[in-house]
Length: 435
Image (cartoon, rainbow, N blue to C red; front, side, top):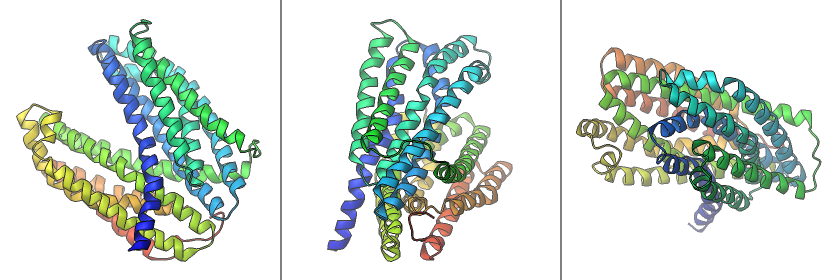
């Protein structure tokens, strides 16, 4: 019991600061929404469109952070802290290059993309375009901050990233209302506030690298390894996006109320996944370090214990969400039909949370081990072989929301079976500073 308690404390020491960092981006959106919402309906709609496009940058940042964590953790476990930090240097070069490309693409594509998303509403399209042209300038800062989170998690320094991210968030929270209202910049003021905060945040992580006094030049062999990991994680993420877009499309074909209920349940699922991902991040760091040190028994032990912690956390969230079955839907919608449809989905949502806790924890184990090709293939199998065909079959058979969410449940079960079988074996646990 003492050993388990110590392990739980190690996971908590890494997971709780990671949770703060994971929550930062949604909080940015909430602050922007609260401030911009008082400008008017057009500005709020424009922020929704522009923010949706900018979510691609956050997705790429998470891919970069997750790939860097596992690689840096292996170096850290092998007691090569300098090379672990060098992984952060190379990830930062990759972040900067990607950010510059995104700025160029954003300036060219901002108009066509926002017009396509806004449809016939030219006022919303023009406002969204103006916001996006400014907001995309923060892409390098976002990506540099995520790369910094990756290498710092890898060397098990999770507190400094938390303070850096909080500093950037507080700066944005102060600047946003000031620039929007007293200064009079309106919607564009929120974009400027975010860019300033993102540049400051990225700069804090770059300064942390410089203070380490490690070689700062690009190293192509390391960059190639990081690109390979990122490629697999991007493909995996694209499979997730295809699944969730298909689920929304099928729910929309049931009824407007069904789509509203689906959105409520799915956003709660994403919120819980965010919390449970903090455990996965701790798993990445601990497993990578154990494998880098060559202690395979310790890595497998961490995998088993982190899996149990994820399962318990998922079960705890299931109890909370289950108890709110009658309250939470009403918080999101006053429509009685939407609330009725939400109650149809609720048992599926609650039932999947314990499974999700275990799945996300084991995802973290394999990302920490660098076994991302297996994760990519498993996700593609679960998505293309089960989720997508079952979702559209539910549409054809008119099974409604239970059909959509049963497909999601089977998607999770297939992933769970694959992850359990993989982690119970030995092929994922490859010792050494590199996989």
